[in-house]
Image (cartoon, rainbow, N blue to C red; front, side, top):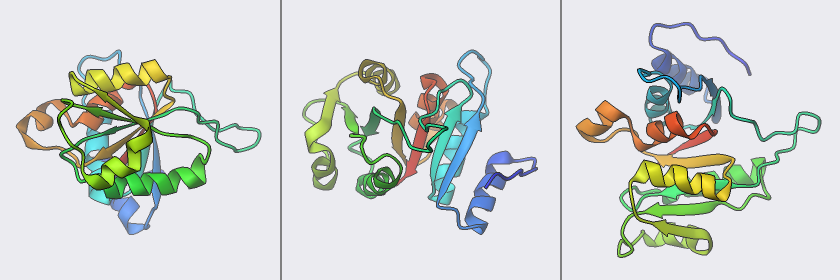
Length: 192
């Protein structure tokens, strides 16, 4: 359903509507803010809506191309990047993502990305979910996610997300918010 919500706090109003109407999935179009330096809007929505509703939220930046064929309604999603974090308990989010992909894009095979040192271990549940398609890289988390997304030609980035942690996330935004601001791609926030 297409709904118009008028409120002074957009993120809170969307989250409240989503909970009250028991939504299973939320799609939000956002402005493409990569060109704007003093922007605070779209990324803040990612950090506030997905964790507070526990609903998967698909953010489409203004200039991002979609992955649904308008004539047939079929998805044409071929390349999906899923960054994973050894500190998040992401197994539940990854299972929800798999369930969503079975319905929305059954032919896509996700590429999982772990950014960190080679010695870091993932939880057994997470490692089992992504063992065949795991890419390991070291470096800055956001830069590496963006680099690998370009490298594999990702059309969507699915981010297990727990919201903001600590003062730096409050100032800079969560990893999901920063990827959303810079990727220029649709981002699916999957709450853990």
